Image (tube, rainbow over all chains, first blue to last red; front, top):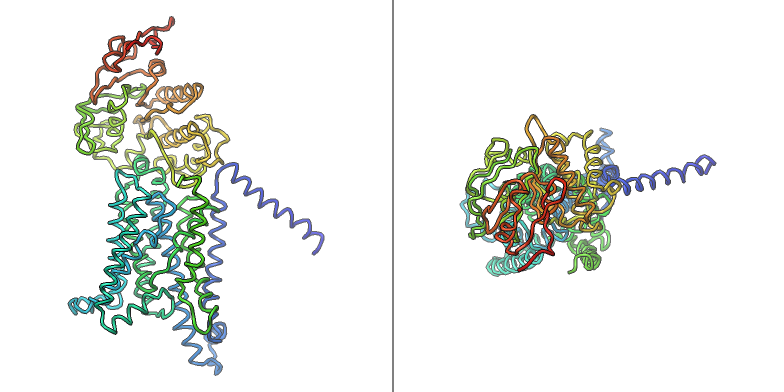
Length: 373
Length: 262
């Protein structure tokens, strides 16, 4: 280390601390939020690249892509490697990222809408509603008119999960909200009841299912990113992308709703319209995710919570940052799931629950005194 | 000008406000007083456009029910009685929420208006504090700064703006009660208008131009404080016999609880 570096290093550290200190004095966390977004974008690219590059097979993504870009007909580039990189790892990485983004952003939106940091699509039963919709489609889809099924094609499952999630969210909102105030206790208890009801109906359907349907349900319900294909990506991806693109437009409204629905109206927000758009977007994102990956829990509660500690609750930054961090974390969990027991793999739902559940408990303990629960 | 005529409001089927008519002029502090449960807050909420109501309500000549929320928000701002917030916003971020509509939302105005609004409620230097860590009175003043920043200019596009304040000084110490009431006065002197639900009759008598006294969802009396605050009105509306006195200079009426006889 040269003398110059030695002198420069502490000053750089000092300037960062000073900036953090300025934020503490002025209450303006915009700079930190923007920096965080940049870091998350870089992390997202790294996570996607790593996810495509690693796996149980020794197929080298760098080799495959390099050979393709080079244009040379490299004999070392085997068909097997090409299939592994392009048809297995790529759709898996892209869809994994989208699902993580969808779940984390849905969590942030739900928390904003319900004005409660504990609202999460998984905890309040939306995922169960989506699952019920999906299982209904698997078991009873055959009874639908053939023309309708043909039109829906690969979208049948995501659409069914979306409708299931939408109905659950609307029901939950109706039950838990009275006079513009959402009761946390009612919301969580109603979520438990709705999840139990959806689970019971799902159970009946499983009981009725024939062997092939049972196989479909079991594979689907494992909560895993394995078996992602371009077809699935094209079925679920557009719904998730649409939700991801619409939701940032709700940020100002969600910020205002932090002060209550009446105050949001006073500040010029069309509250009812905001709520409907938010609910449809969440149901769409969660429904599409659940349809292709089964139940992956806790992403929606952990990610926004971590980010609020760093950049504050301003939804203009919280929503995109949640989407990015959700994608990164889910790809990270997926890589772990593939590596720990390679060449087999763990269902990713196990990993997110193992990491997320203790985190959730920590949040509860930390907030217990403050909120008097 | 805000005009409400023959205003009636029911909450979950129960009639709360019966045929209330009032006019709030720009340049005047209009105070609504009355015992608990007399319908003051409900009236204010109906005027804000927040509650469904019967009768006509107009803001500067426009029927408020035909205006979009953002149009209303550029001409009137509302301070609710109690506000809880769900997430750890800083004081600066809360005040900035008031700047999501109207002409002040332009980036270069936001910082200036935020700072001035905080200074106006005597909270300069509090921008970096977390809202939840403040005392009740400080929180109330942060909310007032947010409301104020929403319609910072008392007159916008040639039309007066109105502050609707529900018990703006209820949690404040006496110095800040005066600060906030003087702030309301200055807003009116700038050409805006204020409607405030008040409990402190003496502050009301000092600062209000127009006083509306409500009881059981109806207006019992209205007019200048000196006309409205009489011994008989105190007994009829508040149900306790009290003597109204006047300060020697100017004759602003005041009432001491010591004079009460049930």
